[in-house]
Length: 495
Ligand code: ADP
Ligand code: MG
Ligand code: ZN
Image (spheres, rainbow, N blue to C red):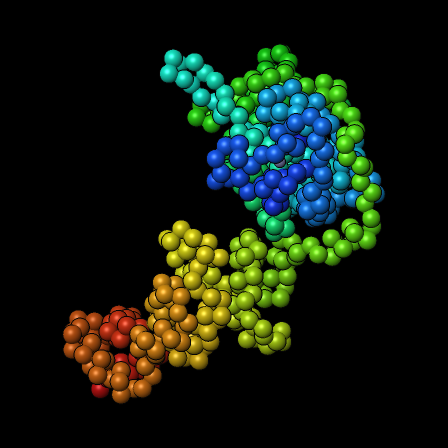
């Protein structure tokens, strides 16, 4: 009996990710790296145009961002690093080479932990994190006669690009996606890259191979390119696994090559047979000094790292008594996490109040507030509601000045206008009515207008009173105190 193909092969994947660093200037010259809305070839100079005789200068911020990323990925930062020339015979690098790092990268030997969907965690080894320069952008066109030609926009060329390479530890498209989402979250927490797959400032190339379960050696791998979303990564990898499995099942071999994902067709196609390192003829970059990395400098950077997502989530659960689900969502972005903590406010860590406030803040931010942000198509950072204003609203609810129902419409008005909670409450006359006299007349009115539920209630159907409470709440636009309404109704209906 043969094993089913699903378990006959082991999937082996290692991922290379490039992220454009959010530096002001390019990697080796002083051209502005903020070229995104600029006309082609306007952010250029002799250095990034690759003129002969010019000298590159290392961007200190880019080195710093790369080391910070390495530290966040649990890498070691060696004492020495250097830049190398990678010979590169394509028109999108006008120099004919790319300055990169070969044998002495800035960071190596780390890991990133992912939370598996079936439960549990897994560490993906990070082989290295290094720094290089990005290429120009090819723009393919067709002229009136239907002939294809290519224009080159050099604006992107020479911008700081960080590469992060994993060990071949990934076992599925899903694990690849989990790794990439976590990595993206960390890069954004660090503020080193926009890390947006769709915009191309985070690009991912998984290397995929299959081997018979228990085989000592890896199979030959295929590098996948042109994956512009997390979804494309997952689909592309799954497609490639099926393609390789079919080849191996048929007794054929997998050609080591680079393949491109065609999103519309849902398949991969061969792009070029894979270069070997020797094709690139790496050699030390003669125009740049090697880097000697001072321990105190690295320690200083380590001390400046922000609290990272894993630590923040754990702290949110511990300190505020939130569920795993809530902590994950609140810590999804640094901005949302900071907002949440600002809403909770500075409260002593001892009593119930902190936990209650945190729970309420979490409910608002993940509930009603998220709904309104979603409708408006904005992030919390773009909201007019200041965290102090939401804090104030929670206090007003606690005091009983605003009912829970009333709070919803108060918040909507706050969201629209950006006004503080107390001001909205006063302007809209939404203060909770807790004087029995004021509610009494509405209660009478509701009883008169709803003979059927009244009859049901009197006939012993206790449930019917809920409807009447609802009517009173509606008449008072949520301003009546619900337990008082219930009490008054019961009194009135008993007589
Ligand atoms: P190359 O020189 O072809 O770029 P590297 O050794 O630099 O290859 O590895 C690139 C990526 O491919 C790394 O993430 C590595 O873990 C992964 N990798 C290496 N060999 C395999 C393999 N046989 N199958 C899947 N991934 C692999
Ligand atoms: Mg490689
Ligand atoms: Zn330049």
